[in-house]
Amino acid sequence: GVEALGGSLAIGASDTDGALIDLDTCQQNSSYSTILQSSIQNLRILSSTTPKPQFIITPLNESHVQAAVICSRQHGFQIRVRSGGHDYEGLSSVSDIPFIIVDMSSLRSVDVNVDDQTAWVQSGAAIGELYYRIAEKSRKLGFPAGVCDTIGVGGHFSGGGYGFLTRKYGLASDNIIDARIIDVNGKILNRESMGEDLFWAIRGAGAAGFGIILSWKIKLVPVPDVVTVFILNRPIEEGASKLVYRWQHIADKLNEDLFVRITISSDIANKTINAAFESLYLGGVDELLQLMEQSFPELGLKKNDCTQMSWIESIIYLYNLQSDKGLEVLLEKNQRKSFYKAKSDYVKEPISEIVLEGIWERFRKVEVPVMILTPNGGKMKEISEQETPYPHREGNIYEIQYLAYWDGGDAAANENINWIKELYSYMTPHVSKSPRAAYANYRDLDLGTNENCHANCPEAMDWGHKYFKSNFERLVQVKTKVDPTNFFRHEQSIPPLTI
Ligand code: FDA
Image 1: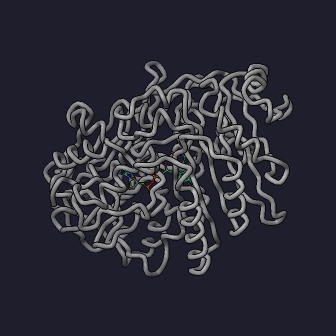
Image 2 (image 1 turned 30 degrees about the horizontal axis):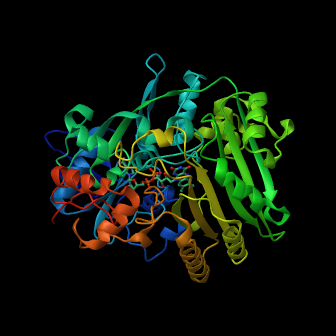
Image 3 (image 1 turned 135 degrees about the horizontal axis):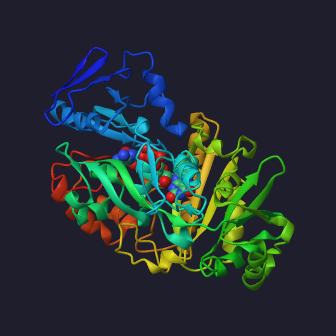
């Protein structure tokens, strides 16, 4: 068993190496708060009343994770697993019932194999680090994942993971070829020993309801020596509504080497709303200009709006990182923490200009509203809805992420949360229906939780279908088989059939 002994955790389970983990992370310890707060990305989660873990375990090897599972079961603690800490609702760091955090941030090795174009990446690695390690070995390989260097691969890959390469290669979870996971009995399983059902579930449904991911084996993808990027700012006040409207007709149909998303934000100082067209093209500038002229001439893209660079440099450019620090900026662990609330939608029919004007009216009511429109199509529509738990494939033109940021304080929190709820309600007639789909990695507890609830209760079916459509039923079957007593759980984990 495992016992907490003052500042240490003694591990003596038969299938572990009998290690002693230094528990610089029990509540009495001076570094407890620093470690607890280290990677909580949404400051909304951090308050004096937020429930705190009994311990934080930062495993240094796989057997420590096994021991944490065995120990927690023996002592009746729930486990919250944390990799990058970017969960929108903080579910990797907070729970209402007695819990421990297993913080994977020390397990972050990335082992790239250029010959077979694969890599094993431990779940505590951040995606910036993964991109860096791939580029270190080869400038001809990349990986399709998210647009923020500090996201952890543990949570991100298990809930989907999209970014500028998604139209060409699909989601991060579409490119996983093996995984090592610790199950409810503390056993380490790989793809072969876990079986295809569990391997399917952990590639899109969030792994935290099934076990603890130790590492992923991923398939790397080819990237050209030269890519072309642009970020074009077009103010709504100067007619950008027409461009946003028009973009909806071409965004998912463009050549799959071309990705153009729109980030809409407001500039408080000038009281303007800006639509930033952000693009990555997997090729040179001349071909890009031709493609844009054919498909989206209204944008008026010019050669000097574009920059040619390597794929790895494009990550730094498109993520707005400090380029004078060189590629090493991707290894920095500085998170841009903030107070925020987010929601998501999928759009199947272009939204009219009148409805867009209604969104801009709402944008003028709060300090820092943001909307990111991410195109679908390309590879995304070639993959069937059942291939992985992530079902939002063919028939979706784009995904919307709504965000509201504030500086702290209850009044601002209430104002912004009410604002985003009203905007979400305004959008109801214009987005996907039955179910109104949502992206599991943009976790939103307003969609419902599974508190005191098994799989057949209406609440779980409701949010479950929004995130996973009819894959929800298969996920419940898998959960019931691998973790029938619901040991691995959180407010939106897949519930077993009965509890
Ligand atoms: P965190 O550690 O908080 O974990 C998230 C969830 O996964 C929790 O339920 C946690 O318990 C579980 N988990 C974590 N590690 C696990 C493990 N080893 N085994 C089992 N379960 C584990 N998404 C996207 O697709 N594209 C994007 O571009 C972005 N961009 C982006 C920017 C910013 C600033 C934020 C905050 C978030 C995003 N996201 C995103 C969303 C992101 O994909 C999502 O929040 C991920 O779940 C984050 O994974 P982390 O490991 O960082 O989070």
